[in-house]
Each structure stands twice: as C-alpha cells, then as structure tokens.
Length: 312
Image (cartoon, rainbow, N blue to C red; front, side):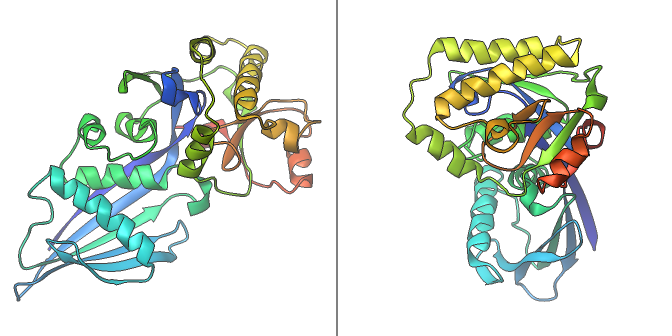
C-alpha cells in the first residue's frame, strides 16, 4: 500500500477577460487556496482493478462519489452521472497521452480530492483538477495539455497559472501561449480586496455569450487592453491603478453592451470595482474606502478577502 499527494493553486484573471482569446496580454494571479488530490493504492487478490473516486468540500462534505473500472474507466457507480461522465472524459484524455496511466492489474485505487475554497467561488475547481491529474499521470508540461486541448474552450491561462505557481502575463500569439512569469506585489496591496458576488459564473457559458455577440475585436482594442496590462505592472499609486482598471471595465462593458458590475450594483461606491474573468459572478476586485465593509455588508455581500490572504 502506498499513496501520492498533489496540490494545485487556484487563479484569478486581473486583466484581459474575453480579449485574452484574441491575443491581448493579460495578468493571471494564482490564489493561495487550491485543490488537493490524494491517491492510495491497494493490491487486490483477484485480477480486477477499480478506481474509487470521492470529492469533498472545504468542510469535508462529500459532493461526488464514483467507482470506475480499470483500465477502460467504465462507470460502475456514481451519485452524479454527469460529473462521472465529465471526469471519465478527463481521465481518458490523460490516458491517451500517457499510455501507462491507470493500466495497473490487480489493484484498487482510492482517489480523494479536496477544495480549499467553497465550490461556488470560481477559483478554478476544474483547472486545479486537470493540473493534479496531469501530475499524477506524470505529465508535467503545460504544452502537452495545450496540444491535446485538455483545457477545453478557454485560453488555457488558468492551467498555465497552476503550472507556474506565480503571477503570469499570458498572451496568445497565433493561438500559441506566450507566458511570462512575473512578480506582482503592488505597494498598495493592503488597500486591495476581493468581494464575492454570491453566485458562480460558468466560464464556458460566459465565453459563448461573448462569442455570440459576434463583435469585431479590433487591433486597437487588443492593443489598448495590452497597454493597460503592461502599465499596471509599473503602477506606483492606488489612484493610477484604479484609473487604468476603470478604463479596462469601460472597454469590456462597451463590447458586451452590458453595464459594469459597479454601475449595476454599486454605483455610489467611491472605490474601484473590477470584474475578474467572466462577467456576472464570482469575485470582483475592490479598493478600500472608509466604511467599505459596512457598505457592502448592507447590500448583502459579506465575503470580503484581503489581497494578502487571497493571492499567492
């Protein structure tokens, strides 16, 4: 009997949402919270092999359980059929890359995944799972996952962020990611916070909504977003940082033809409110103003996390 342990950090996209798909330079930040995957192997006395999978919340409550046959990853049991199918497809993709993955005879494998954060927070429950399974399958190269389109419909920045385990500049150039690890440690970080909007936004749905807009994204827009991304890295003051991200919100708002989250929910808040990733849910970045917590609590938004507690 022996076991393996893997852990991957979550992510937040500070700049470039949507326009990242068109080649804009974007800042992705890894979070301290992430997801672990523990694998326990036990030898069998018969010739059959099975994979027992369980996934628990940050409060150790089971939200998924399934049993799969090895090596074909047939679904023998699950408490949620769609999740089981989704997981099976992931595993089969990894098996197509790494031929020896989950080929062991006469073994029972117990896998347990655990999130550090509530499942509805949108910090990367899927991307951290993909990264953990990749490590388990001895695939330690983001480029292999990219080649086999493991990341699905998005740009792949989220998985790249978990591989680099630090802030990155992510840019697609002819659909090939250019990744630059950076140190993002603004002098005013004690004045930055993350506010949860009380609902999870589906990334795939958000991207499809954007694509269905059939907007022509001009080079001018792409260059402007990239300019904002690069300028942010050199901000010395909170005021300068806020001004750049206000511009960013206005650009995306005009493209989507929907109001910013600040205009919709917090029009009288004097500080920054910046969407992170897909618009409409998950977290937003806010900047400190006197009475900040009271303001948001009064509106029913009670989850506020400091930059230092959230970002790796």
